[in-house]
Length: 569
Image 1: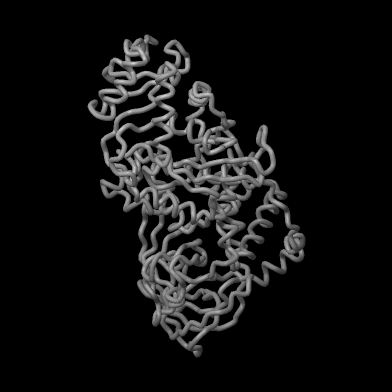
Image 2: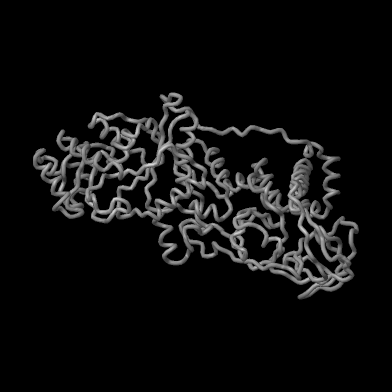
């Protein structure tokens, strides 16, 4: 391995260790080196061995020794970093005028909001801000079979958590009389008709590009059938279809549905209406009458652009500019209700706030900050390329927001007992943050400590260890329990530095560790790990929802007095 590469690895390891309580990890340095030297992705095994050796040596140094080497070999690491303004933003809007742009976010209240909703809401919100325009939240509630007040409320709560503000809030169902008026206008102009064919026949005709027999009915008969839709026809027996082009290559244009009968009670207007507009009819009319200048939606709706324009042309109504962007999902974390709902029903996932899910409630509970979601989404820009992001892409943004304010606490898993003899101290004060002034916490101690099982495996009789923030201990006994003599502030060179929890006031909590929910198409049965761990009593003083960094473990969110959720490294 090239000496220059070894030097670069040592530089990264020293910097990361110095910034994180004197310790770093192989995988962190591997990630950094692969990020700057992608050519090593084919030599991961070889470079991993070198990283492992260097990291072990760096971790054996005291913080003072690490700083001394940085000052001597890599002084540039200690220079204050220049503030680099992050380049973010969206491309200019075609035909946009300052102060006159109107955008909207029209979610259907048929499920809990997820990362994909966040992307749509943020992009539309940012464009309105960018041009000093108006932003509308419009609940697209025209399918009573699937929509509930529970989902309506969840969407509003999620958007509020994201910090998104609206100039107008409305529901599509507010304008039902307008849809009826426009529907009748299309029928009376011969641009729409009532179809009473069976569903299979409609599908067959559309596949074969053949006109439906109902399309030849006169306007008088269509008006009578419209009235029957309100009074006589049952759901599925009649629909209103737009007179498009049955020969069109774009299948969307082959006489699509404009209205259908739904007898379910609507969550706000009850059973006042039974003829409901389709998505295409509703979005076309609403965007036009709401004054929307630029309508953005995910690219699976791109083929519907032609239809929406055609509906508005047929009604001689104003057409907005239509733009499209890619859907946003995380690898192994599906956003589809079709997948998530059965997981909840089968008990594989607890609820929509399960930290393995990409719903906004789950991301909040996991400890992801709304500011990080916004930065992440803005970093993706307005692209139509498929966005199946690894979750750690969001983690990188979140880390910047939680690091500076997360208190550092000790926590041990698979605990082993360590008895320290000759310990004269009864309490010790430890800083809450290695860099920022966040005060100190006082921990009462006696001879009994818990150390992590992973650290215990490396301890041998006769060696010295350093209990972080306390002092050196010379090990006199190893086994199911450990024993040692307190040495105090001795030499820290080449000795392991480990965290600990005082046995007398240790607080036991459950640590929830979410992992990838799906491996390909397969549900990951091991996607949620639970650990019983010990932490400091200071944990009880933290507010629920507060972010913590458990030293050498990662960032976690306090879920309750007895449970924390792992956010990320």
